[in-house]
Image (cartoon, rainbow, N blue to C red; front, side, top):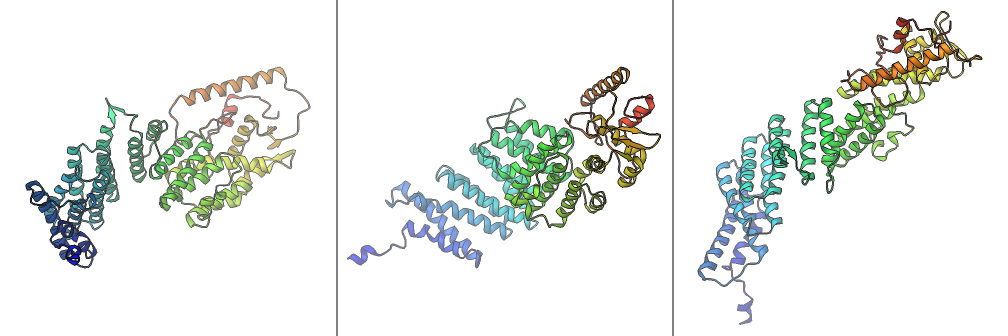
Length: 489
């Protein structure tokens, strides 16, 4: 009698539906047999529902047992997609959505994500058409269910799939559709900060890949994202957004802010395992570190040390070391060894000009008088360029000296006489003129070659190290015939 009570009823719905586990164990070794058993699992569930309705059974399945039915459907979809049975797979997939109100929200989401992952695997095997159909059916069904959060997530996954296939046009199209759902009367709905952050991060990533990061776009992304109050910043989003912010501030000459954001972007990229992007931002961090006149060494960061011997990073590290030591020879060698991308190229001449100013300040330290020809040969530029740099350094207050053009000497001896009133008035007039031009410049669109920034003193202009051509104040003084005490008479 006791044995009969303990015997398992093999025809019970509980036993029949738990055949899911048997099928799951043989999915990889015998997919077709597993497919057959998964179908039996779903049939058991259907039979159970029917007999409960008619009162033919009083057996009750637990929630976790009922949840096996949609999981069996998901498994069938994945197997059929792998076998190339796209039509049957999509028909079965339709049934998965009928369980939205039967199982928990968590289980429902897990089932949908499992199908999307299976579809993405197809994309990696060039069966991209079938994969996209799965994503589109998912979006269509979720829209009918009004499941906006899962709809958003699926859209972002579809965007990533297109991006991996290098179909950037469709990737942007998907993002635009999501973006419209996050707007009210054409303006961003600030109550959806996480979605908006993801949208702008994905869009920025597409622009980085395609090389379409103009100044207007950088400013646009910064304006849209810097005030978003996200719950938790996803490292995938933070990495891209901080890179965009770094580029934006770098283009404006705010090197200290650019350095901070590039360093954050580097760490976020490293966290998510995107080493190529991490190295890119580390090179930007090294460049901006040189330009923001800080003593901090980016390679003191624990995360950065592992890249110090990487060929891509080593050139920038050598450049930074030469810059720090004012070693002109090593700096020129390092410049030739690096392979700059478009952003490094954009600011390369600024970096060179900054180094030249730094090198001159270092060279003149032991002297009271120094020949301009010596500075020219040391920097390997023409005389006009050296004069341009010296005048700029004097105007910026970094050098206290006079230029004797007749003898070709920079005189650093302190003058025993004060400036006469006429020369003093000229100084004030020239400085006021320079300040007025600077104010006007800031209100106009800037050419990429200019060195922009909030630094005090007169504006530092672009100078090409190879040709030695420059746009500095030097030429302006000569054309005006100024007799300022910048020059000895």
